[in-house]
Structure formats: structure tokens, C-alpha cells
Length: 417
Image (cartoon, rainbow, N blue to C red; front, side, top):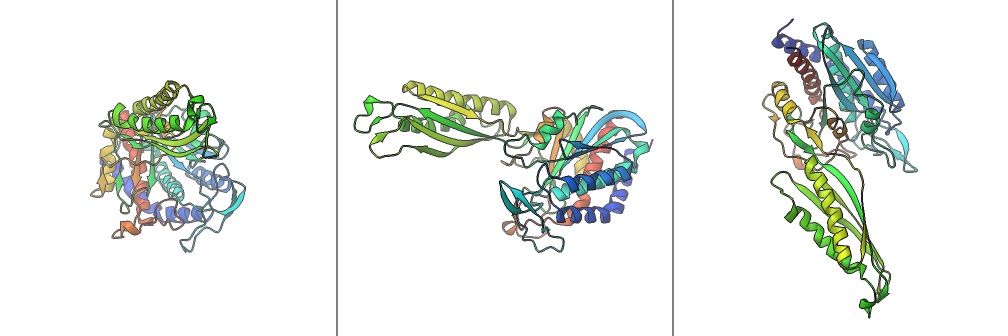
């Protein structure tokens, strides 16, 4: 059995050897973006290359998802690596020679398509890591499951890709013991840097709606009805105390924001109904559940005290992207080795959300950010994810390949001892 140092050398050598392919794969995928659950060409592209590497491949998971399984030379646990596949309805403005000219239909309108969130990077790096791991198959103790997931960006009225893949057994047969994933960009960190944190890394995002039902009357005689505007105003103020007075915010940050409020048709009519909507962002699963319940209770209680009623509805949203503390501590040396000086294991959390969070609800998970801003560039001028000018630096690709492969090898090696 090779030493862990010898395995690391082999990872680094194999990553360097496959880098030209990784760059070519990234550019091909970038030039041919597809929306969520429509990743037909993308799926075929990925499946073909996994098969050529020796993986047992399953396609059509959650419609367009691809799963590759590599069984090592000795028994051991199962580790999963995940990348997302879908593009965005964004018309590209990078001017790159391999820029997307693809068109599609989104929300009933023809739109330009672009990998404006870096999923082309994610897929190419995971293919590269898959190649590295396949070259080390005989020395792996356990198995590696490669997951290419559709529809991370979400589809209106449908479950996202992670939920759908979990429902179709992606974490089973064989059962996954731990899962790793990454995202490029998010913050303007320099290319090749790696940042993450234990516990909540990306926010849970919930949308709420509240319908306040009072009793309509003449504006000159408000005592003859129940003023839904006044009640709604009290609810808006009451909701501000959920975070400021009812939650221990030293544990984790949280936000409750009312973004819209609508009610009334005329200056001298007290309306019978007011509608409001807002967003809730949280980083701790327990705190999230508590805040959701307090939002419901606060709105309903204030309305009841005034003789009105409040219909509170909160969507399921994405959960917190939760980095298992024990797994994060265990794997921190692996990421430190790869990133060297450009490394931060306690980065500030971000209010963006990710459906990788669903995997973390089922098995221990670690998600990290890979910097892709050109070294020496002005952070203020950085075109961030979802911009039509988003142009990640390809020099970061090898870091992503090494990081994913190292996490898999180090986890399997440690568990087999």
C-alpha cells in the first residue's frame, strides 16, 4: 500500500497530465450551455468520458443526471463528489472565442444561454478528478461516486436537481458515507484560493407571504371594521423583533425582510385585506426552524390581538449549506495542502444559497469555494457570478482537480486504517 505522501504525488502528477483535457472540456461545455432538466448534450458528453475512464455509468437520474461509480482495489467506504450541470438564461458578453451563442426558452421567452455561474468549471474539474482517481483505482480502499446533477439553479414549480437525485437513490447502492462539492466565484478571491468554514457556509433561503384579513369599512369610521393596514404595519414592526430580540444572534447571523406590501384601493376606505411578502435568511438549521416558527407566531398573534387574522405561508426553500464540523476538521489538511498560502478555513458565510445543502441533510458533507478572479485584478471591477461578463480564470482549474481528488483519496485512506 503506497504512503499518503506517495498518493499525493500521484494526484498532483495526474492532475497536471490531464489539465489540457480539463481546459478543453471546460471550453466545450461553456460553448454548449443547457438549462435545468434540459442538459441532454451535456449529459451525453459527461457519460461518454466517464465510461472511457472505466466508470460504471448510470444516466437519466432525475431526467438528465449522470452518476459514475469507481470501485477501488480494496474494500472500504464510499465517497461522493458532486458537480452541477445547468446554465442560466443569460446572454453572454465576455467576447471569448468559445463564448456561448446558444439560445433557449425560459419562462415562455426565447433567451440567450450561458454558464454564468461556473457550472462548466465544476463539471470539467470533476471530470479531471475522476480521471485522476481512475488512474489510482487499484490503490483506493472503497469506492468513489461521481455525481453530475441537473437543475441546481432551480425550476419554478419543480423540485431542484439535488432533491430529485436523492429521491432517485443517488446516495444509495452503494450507500454514500461522505460527500464533497465546490463552487467557483461567489466572492472575488484570487484564482486558486480555497475558502470554507465549518457549520453554515451558505444561507438557507425562505420566501414568506402573509395575508392580513380584517374587515372593510369607511375610512371615517374605522371602529366599524378591522383595519388590515394598521395590523399589517404592526406585523412588519413585530417581525423586526424576531431577529433583534428573540434570537441569539451570537450563534449565527439571520435576516427577516419584508419586501412588498399591498393593500387598499381608495383614500377613504379601510381595506379588508393586505398582502405582504419577504425573505428569511439563516445559517443554522436549528435557528432556521425557530425563526420560521416565530414569524408564524408573531404575525398570527398580532393579528388576533386586533381581531384580524393572518394567513402565513413559508415556502420550503433551500436549507443551510452545512459543513459537518467533524468532517470539515478532518479534511482541512487536505485542502490546505492543495491551496497552500491562498487558504482560509474560516471565511465569512454568504447569503447566497445552494441545493448541495440537501445532500448535507442526508450524509456528512463539506462544500468549499474556489477563487477564480485573476491574480492582481481589482475586486471592485470583478464581474461576479450570474453576470453576462462572468469570466473565471482557467488557472484555477488544476487546483479544483487536485482538491476534489485529494478529498476523495484522503477520506478513503483515513477510513480504511
